[in-house]
Every structure is written in C-alpha cells, then in structure tokens.
Length: 407
Ligand SMILES: Cc1ncc(COP(=O)(O)O)c(C=O)c1O
Image (cartoon, rainbow, N blue to C red; front, side):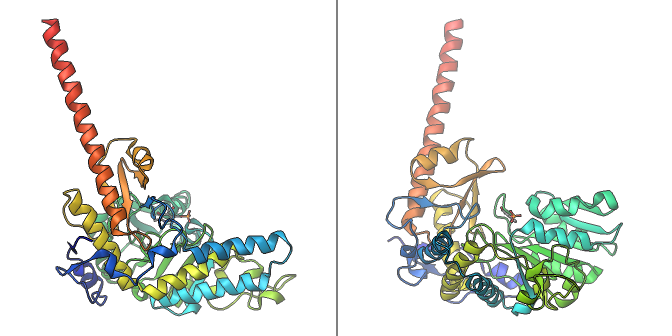
C-alpha cells in the first residue's frame, strides 16, 4: 500500500484546546490502512463488494453487528417477542456511550429522534425579541426551528461561517452553528465561538451531526449540543442526542415530554400529576425500538477504536484523496469537489458513492473506508474530469469547424 503523508491537523485541536492526536500527528507520514486496528473495515457489509461508500454525510453505514441488532429487534417484533425493556436498555446504554464519547455525564444527555425536534425546544425557550446569530448556509434542521420563531419577534442574523464569531455582540442570546457544515465539510471555529459567546453573555448551540464520531469536540464547553446519530455515529435513522449544561437545560421547556420522560418511566404511563425526570431525561422521547437496538453496537465500535484514532484515519484518507486530485490541504473528513452536475450518478455507476450538495460533490471518509476505496474514487473522478475536458475540446473543435464552414 502506498505511503501518504497526513496533513497538519493539529491546528484545529490546539484551537479548541483538545489534546492533539498522538501517533501520526501533523507532518508525520503514515499508512492510512494502518491507522485502525486490523479488520475494522471488514466489520461493514461493503467489505469486498466493490462499492466505495463515501457518503457518510448522507447516512453512515452500520457495522454488521449493529445492522444485525436492528434486524433482530424487527424479527422479534414480527413474532411478538420484542422486549420493550430491552429496547429501553438499548437507549440507556447508548446515552451512556454517547456521553463517554463526548466526555460528559449521562445525566446531561437527552435521547430523541431528530435534530429539528431538539432545536425546536431551544428555539421555544428563547424570549420574544431574542437575538440569534447563525451561519447563513447551515443545515435547515438547525436553522428552520429558529427562523420559525421570527413571527414572535425573535431576530435571527444569518452571517457567513467565517464572520460568525465577530458577529456575536452583547445583544446576542444564542449562537447556533454546525460543528461541521453539511454542504462542504467546513469546520466551525468552535473555540472562537465559545469565547465570543462567553464574552457577550450568549449561549452556544452546536449541531454535531456531521462531527461527533470523528472530530474531537470541546463538548464540556458548549451550552447545548445536538446530534442526529444516523451519520457518523452509524445508527439507523431515528436516534438523536441533546447534551447540555444543567443551566442551559434548565431553561428548556419539556414541550414533547410524554411517558418516557417521567421520573419513573413505568409509573408515568397514566394520569397526572406531571412527574418528569429531574435530569436531561425529562426531554427524552420514547425509543424508536430497532434504531436504538442498532445504535448500541455502533457506539461500541466507535468507542473501541476511539475518536482520536478515527480522526487520524479519516483525515489521512481525506489527505490521500486530496493529493490524488491535486487539491490543497484540508482539515475535514468531508471533501467537497467542484464537478459538473450529474457527476454523483456517473460515479455511482463506477461503484463510488458520493453526493451532490451545494453545486459540488461531497466525499466522506470514515471507519469503513479503505485506502483502495480512496484510490478508486481518485481514479473515477480523474476519468470523469478527463471525459469532461475531452467533451469540452470536442465542442470547441465543433464550434471552430462550424465557424470555418460558415465563412
Ligand atoms: C448538520 C446536520 N444536522 C442535522 C441533520 C439531520 O437533521 P434531522 O435529524 O432533523 O433530520 C443533518 C442531515 O440530515 C445535518 O447535516
């Protein structure tokens, strides 16, 4: 296997005050396939199929064990043997594992289904006339619940990612941003945002959906962090976490609380009075059974490998891809490439799965990705570009001969 250098990515870690990854650090040379324990890629159903799956930003591949756990729950349901207690235990285990991954305690973590649902609680907690600063191209599950509050006087100022920290001022109540942008993989300047929010008495709301699972995050310094888990946390659709400081959580209304948010779950299924859990569990939604069953083994694998190792692996593969295409350095596991419309479909015909977003094509590198997946993608994109250039030359030549004919 080729030896490819890893780009300097210690800068991000230093900026957010997280311990720099050990081992293959900035500038060191490393073999991408050698950055993970042996056989990790084989734990995914894509291994040996000839498909280079590079679309985790759309949805993450389940490790086989996670896929099997979700299917088992469905099989049990079909024959009347589903244990609701076991499904509840899966949610509880997942909450604890997510808390460990982020260096938090489980009492600060609520479990639900979707980012927009949890952001809706944050949005509803804002006083009339509150000021929110957010990124103008952020994902709408973060933006829409906030924008929906404008009719009661909440002001949402949308600014470019690079200007976000400078846009925070004493009148700002909330700074909302995705840690990694869905559209192109850009990283938010979290350290600057946390500092700007603290200096101006504002709270931070960070959507970690495209970040948790590969990017070390300063979660203990973020007021509210929301994360849908069906991407980099490799879950089926329908699991999501909200982590917050006790102070920030205290200000949220438990608008969607039902029996599952009760202090004693099975004593909360009928009648009043309201008796919600005191910790973050009071924001829980009832578990989407098979999804939580599938979440547990996925988080086990992520914990087993560890975020620092995944970070190194993903960035090493992203660097291999970038250098193969002659692109400059980057610090994200998502690489966005300018390619003509329709390119994702053409790449898919070559077995390279990527997605078109914001007029470009988005390639993602995660646990299931191998160096040979990257090389296939480089080859396929290079062929696609060569085809484009040949097409352009041919149409130029046709144009020239037509104008000659016309003279
Ligand atoms: C940054 C970000 N947040 C959230 C989501 C998902 O939000 P929801 O759980 O509301 O579908 C996505 C992608 O679908 C995303 O890219």
